[in-house]
Length: 156
Image (tube, rainbow, N blue to C red):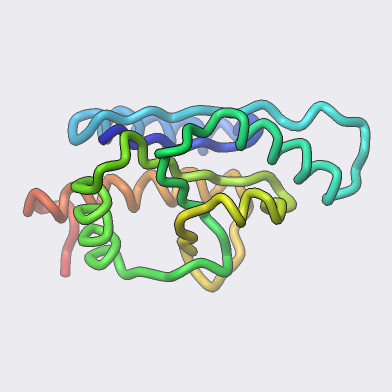
């Protein structure tokens, strides 16, 4: 199964780009992996609902019917690193062709995206910027892969 992480909008901080690049490269040693930046909504409105609707059109238009879509959302399920690794193991053995993790924009997701999603995962009860969530999630995904291979990256 191919694993993809989609993020809406460019990362603006160099230090985050550097970290994302490190974990993107590492993940490719473990699984078929793609990191994709989706463009910001092209609307002149600053209304969060309008932006979410435009982002939804873009996201939903790129999905295939058999994709397994996971939203990174503050209201999602929270896992320890080990439990996330076991969840990943189950997902990777499923019949879907693509496992897609979506990191939304600053205003989150529209109702249509929530309705299409197969799962929601929260990184923490704390709120992180959508740009920082990118780096944190890629590190956790890498950590999950090392746990599944019994490699010494994760200390229990």
